[in-house]
Image (cartoon, rainbow, N blue to C red; front, top):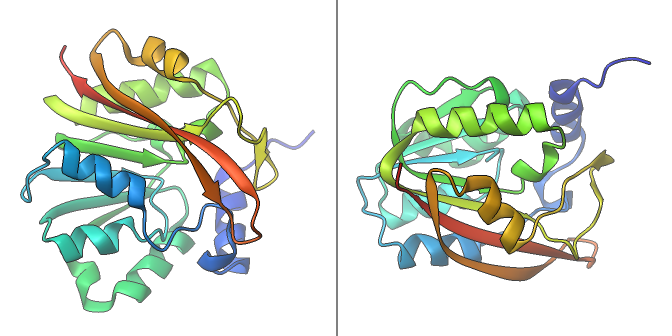
Length: 207
């Protein structure tokens, strides 16, 4: 059996679908922005959006006046699309084309944001590599926001198996170095009007 090529899969998806057609499309990432406000993340904080693709989170960050933004995605096509949409504003953002499981951060971040990327890591090996990148890249005292499919969410997305999470399973996964702050669930409505239940959890690095 041919080995699944993650990069090829996502590049093809972003080549053949406009953002408004993908299931995770959000014009306004309301939950992420609310967490950002509640955590009182400063405007000069270093923020990284994992699996940001061509989502609108970066647009809102720029509009709110955040100055140190990095977007990482495995798909170059996704990042090219985001740059084209932002125009000259794209020059204010650092763009990284990389698989997060082999990402070696070159700086420390104050806010690590991941909406709908983490749940695509289904093996223990991939998850450990992600945690390693997180540990290398997040400042002590920095914040982590993870949004994944909940135990009431779908089992697949974009034709790929995903891993569901609960408040308890996320807390257990990050509890060695991170204190859980708050978790909530949210019903995301896709462009085809399907309901996908997400869980969002925020953590602070303490070790």
